[in-house]
Length: 152
Ligand SMILES: [Zn+2]
Image 1 (cartoon, rainbow, N blue to C red):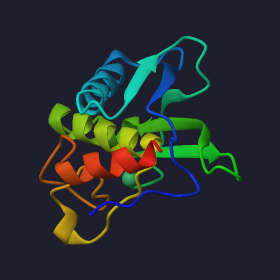
Image 2: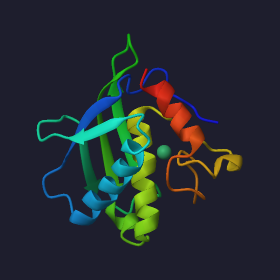
Image 3: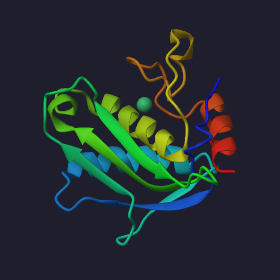
Image 4: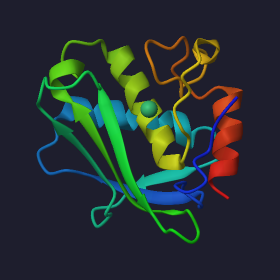
């Protein structure tokens, strides 16, 4: 299954992002990896643009168990996103493997498309599984079907 956030989804197949100044190269790398996986589905085209208001950044604190979070704003009439931010938790991601962090970046980018977390353990085989370790790290056919709806 998949869940599209009807009041907060991309509403377009093509949009931009930019990195916060000073973001570590490892975090840029995880992001590039996630972008390749989503752009490779041919459902979306997420491209870097230095004037983009959509920002990929990081924060330091150990004050949360959330590995990364995506915050976004949307037009209340259309439900289409107007701006979003991904923030990686350096404290937690610094202790995880590159594979895990690439998977996290792919998951967060799924939120920028408008896909919601899946919490039931039957969804471990989707990148939008949002609780613990998932068994896939690339968008599954379900994630892709959800993305196809979220860009409408
Ligand atoms: Zn999530």
